[in-house]
Amino acid sequence: MTALTVHFYSSALTECNSMQVVLPSGDGPWPVLWLLPPMGCNHTRWSAHTDIEALAERKQRMVVMPDLKLSCGLDMVHGLGFHSMLVTELPLFLREHFSVDLTSQVIAGAKEGAYAALYAAAHGTQAYEQVIALSGGSLTDEGELLDSDLRFCHAFGDQVSALRGSAYDMGTQVQKIRKHSEVYAAYGMEDRYCRSASRLGSRLPPEQVEVLHGTLGWEEWYEVLQRRV
Image (cartoon, rainbow, N blue to C red):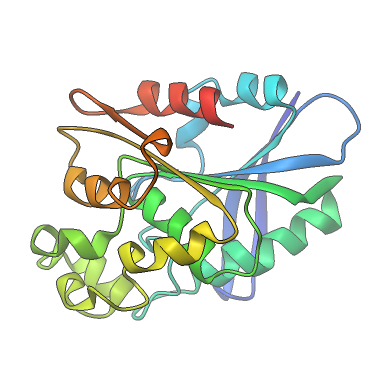
């Protein structure tokens, strides 16, 4: 197993960014697990809070954890092009620098990272076998909670509640995603984004939804990944 911190220049961002990459032992090519953090957490947080290196080794998957900063995985209206970086630039970067199998990709994220994963599957250029949304759904369902937060206004360019029913609304996009990816949702009944996670779950088959008590955190998210990836 090899863990790397990679600094790279992104044309989509017009600046440098960072990601952590965990390679299992062996020669590859490796299938990919994209792992997206909650807002306010950088590319180091999954490794800091979970044993993601052990998961990469056990599942024989390359794990890629990019820094999405405050973007929610979007090409921000008032900011930088993180969606383009994630779905266009980084797969090409992996193919150029690593032994990678891009025909087998899973994308997962927690909280705002769950939204980013769904958005990537709905509007990106990559084919994901599975999308795993942990403690999150469509942020457009959380408008009243988020409308006064400038971080979300910078990403979405408007009050989030005004975007329900648009291309930003993963509730309306989830059936499109399910045409090419299995979607799995796991959340706690006291999660901050319980409402949007529940609405996402209502659009999925019962066997693809896991509802737990309390508030989920790194330990619970990691346990879900161990079962699902």
